[in-house]
Image 1 (tube, rainbow, N blue to C red):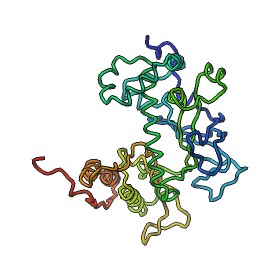
Image 2 (tube, one colour):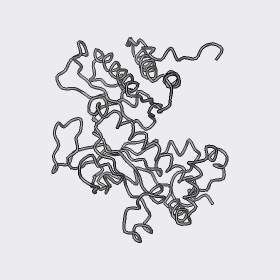
Image 3 (tube, rainbow, N blue to C red):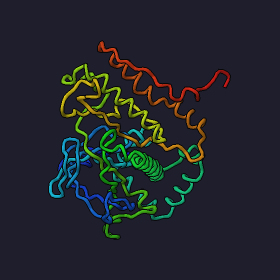
Image 4 (cartoon, rainbow, N blue to C red):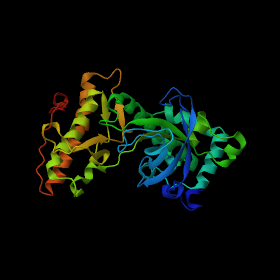
Length: 352
């Protein structure tokens, strides 16, 4: 039975509403961002971001959060922060890429039975240990198995983003947003919460009914792919803005990171106080990279050749420089982009 067709589908906008209070678990995985132990954080939704792709994006008000427009924090004053939730229910792009129907509440009823029967644990064990398991059997998966697959995929993306931010911690607030906390949201059905008294924990229940998230500094700006549409941003600043994005891409390599999802959409541009036109290092704008879930660290046994070849093939630099040069040419702006060719020696040769 296709459970997704037995109940009206729910959207992230219907589920996460402006004014809603989310009770987040901070430090459930041992990380609180401070010396304090695990605690609850009440976050009020003040803006929803759409569309959802691999995660749900919310602007929330939380006590003492830092944002790009505030220089101080207060434990008693709620400030905006950006909450990124890896919620399988509304990961629309991930669901579409895998041919999985939209989520409905009935699906989680099936998931609960799947968990309590013990089948979920066996399914996840096979998914994680057998590289060909998905390819061989996904056509036969039922709704609960599809949800378990999505939950596991999103857990991997969350871990990848957490690892990337940790590797880049010396650049927080400068080229990347500050990480305020790692959080979790309990989405267990009432059948679990009423019986067990709350958060579903780690283990298999946690795999299915725990939404991992990252609470980040709120960046109140525009994305790089919208640069030419910003009527209040002078053209004299465009070159410097793109150059800053390219410098961030270079920084990834310096930190042994490869980002499989470098796009202009994943850079946020913010006005910087004091003005300037980008000459002599005096820029009116600053640029930060966001969305690091498709980053990976260089493997401990990855040779220089293997790493260089992977970086060459990804061409993170070209994904910014060539794309932005083409976009800005359409509006009559000549962007100067000279590829560094940092990984040229690892390029494929004729006959390979």
